[in-house]
Image (tube, rainbow, N blue to C red; front, side, top):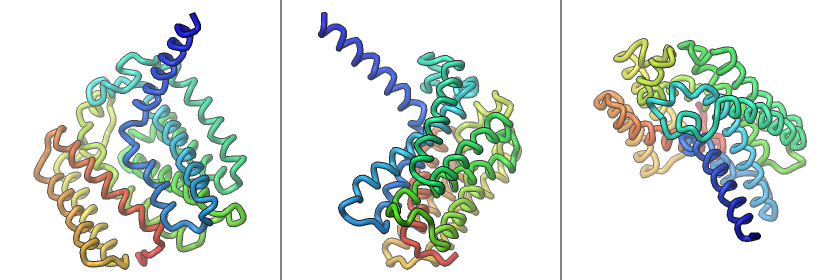
Length: 292
């Protein structure tokens, strides 16, 4: 009897954990590694490094999950492009997602309040992003969509980096803020890369993404911006020849692939390379070496 109850509880726990994983699976590569990148050169003592990394990673994850729940609160556009997600696969209802989203939003703000005013401000920024993007439907606007996303990334990065600081230094330096703003500009000008594999679902949901409005021009512009940012970062960082060559080659490969390969499958593969490129670009505020 007891074993049966424990087995049922473990089965339910596994089911719900899998559901949470499926909500945010597509975004792990973009968001979660940021904490580890900032951790590399943070100004904290060895005795508190593991705790600081755990805090910042947990904070990044719950805010990523908040964004994912908000973005997937309808689910109809995912039936075509991402049928494995919880709503289109039937693991959870739209009403349950919406309730869970607001409960988690309140939890994120409570946790951030306990972490200090700068982290709370960052959490409020993430929550405002979800409201603007999903509830006020800015996700359907060609320009404001990317602007919202860039601002959301900026807020998330500020919160993550602030949590890596010693408790007595809960603020960012001007150079760090400048680097984070540069990262936000990079995201604003290249984030349409995420839209190339999802054209079918976006058309179904009525979104006006860049690849839908300008199928050819969007690829040329995103490709050019990736290569331009790659070149600027290579010349702005104090990199050795091998690292500079690798990063530059990665940016060129991404740019060329977006131009040559235009089917959804290969766009997804190019998007994976883009996410790796974006993680490396996020190393800019950690190392504080940029002079852009």
